[in-house]
Picture 1 (cartoon, rainbow, N blue to C red):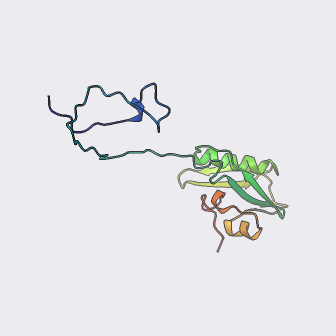
Picture 2 (tube, rainbow, N blue to C red):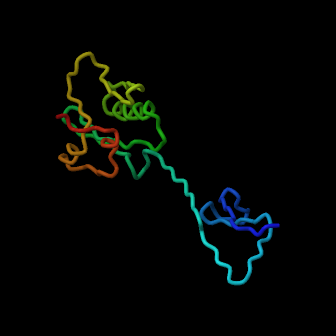
Picture 3 (cartoon, helix red, strand yellow):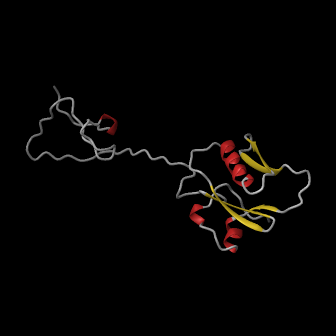
Length: 154
């Protein structure tokens, strides 16, 4: 039998005495005999990382303005499609003023929030980060507005 040159370790193969996927123990399928003064090193590491687009600490604030009143809505955490995110935003806005519907254009990957009223008798604006800062309550790291590409009109 040839000597073992590499041992591949995967946290999915942890034994029952392991605490977690970041603090684990494995049982090797066979005993490895190492001569004295053997040197071992880590040759490669693969650490998959994933997170929600919106979570409690990131991208969870939505800033908008209706009739000269500013609003900050907390978006629930989740891994959303463009359609489900648009629906969440409209639902948050409808908690304030129940006159909005969501429209999603999947071919251009864009969302629209439109009024259900035939003519607007009030003002509505989704705030850019710059505009929200001017009102003094923006938490830039938590804003979904820039993530969505909401920019000042030029």
